[in-house]
Image 1 (cartoon, helix red, strand yellow):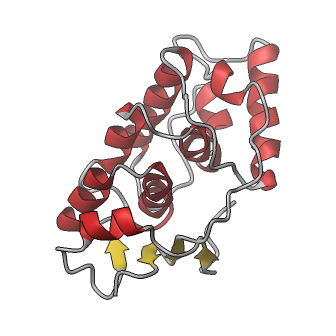
Image 2 (cartoon, rainbow, N blue to C red; image 1 turned 90 degrees about the vertical axis):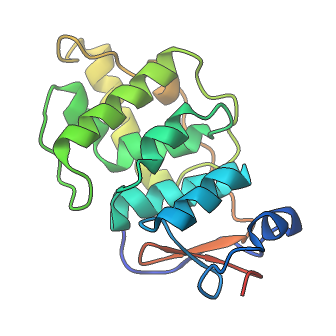
Image 3 (cartoon, rainbow, N blue to C red; image 1 turned 135 degrees about the vertical axis):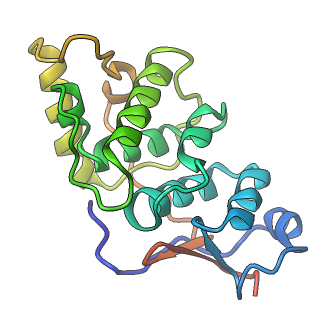
Length: 192
């Protein structure tokens, strides 16, 4: 699902996250993943749901000048939906076929190749223990397209397919209402 500029409401901020981030001025409760201090705060919070929103903000809107995306893919607590969103939103089916040019405005092709590789390696390595966040059902078409490429033996030479990540559908998105993604800015309820 490509960004549309619409707000995605995900709810009030937990008190533990508010306490962890409370010493920082978060610009009226807003987090900009293109800002180094905000990236440090997001990394330190230990909240996979916030990491998921930050990954969407970086890839779809703001870019990743502080290498948040490679970092989040290395975290054991990262949710399966975060990796799924990165792989499917950026059209992982192109990667599986060996393409090196992707229809993205905010992350360069070379960096996307690294991210796709990281998702695949993690999928086929330690995998994703957390599977609570879910994805919009619109992603299932791309997931099935990727599975068909894998099952039909059409994966380009040298690419490890993320079969474990894609093997089963994602649950519906969790809507606990802690964050809103608004044109790439994460709005945290209760920080202001």
